[in-house]
Image 1 (tube, rainbow, N blue to C red):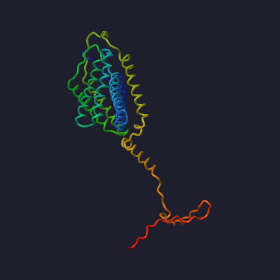
Image 2 (image 1 turned 180 degrees about the vertical axis):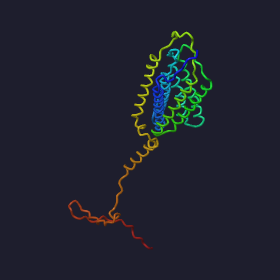
Image 3 (image 1 turned 135 degrees about the vertical axis):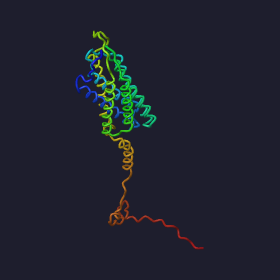
Image 4 (image 1 turned 45 degrees about the vertical axis):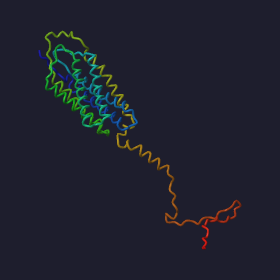
Length: 307
């Protein structure tokens, strides 16, 4: 029997919340990566890892918030805990691979292409691992063309995100890039969900293994959400990112050094004559008794003799 799928059980609540989490993860990740590129003295691997974890958690959280609205009317839904956690790990690791490639090699065509393909395939793998964790009293079936389209969208979205990570500098441009990333990730998810159909078994006894969405997903979503909030606090109070201008920060040390050098130079001495006045004659020197001392002898060359 063919099951009836509803991906929007709670209306617009789940897709909007999922989109916002994807945007939040993307924005935090981009700012962390920008931080690693602007300041050479910073701990670059740490900021890149924080950026990758932010983007990966944002994508994973987006996926499972959207899955809260997924239901099959003819059967209940349960989740496999191991596969669900594995999908989170895959999301962070594959995004980290792409972020470290472009973070150290730049946004050249070869590096960006390899990083985008690896990250896009990893994001798609995260999605389908998450779908494999869904347990119903039936079998999932997938339309090949829609699956291929979702993978292509994932690769394009990942490549665009990685390009923005090493190219975008200002805060507003990072915000705009994160909004586009949210659209791309959400589009990939719902394209992949459009490929799904369920063949429900006749005996709907509910005896299959797994945890219900409310007992598994809601507690598991709490961890990545708290992480994103903490990462947001770190980014918010970082002085370099608060300024939001990469070029200013790059030139700031040289400006501070020039200001110090200028302050160390003695102030120029200007004579009165330079300003149109008349200089006063030099006072005669006085000895220790207050009487005028004779002027200091002036050295003169010895007279030349003619022979």
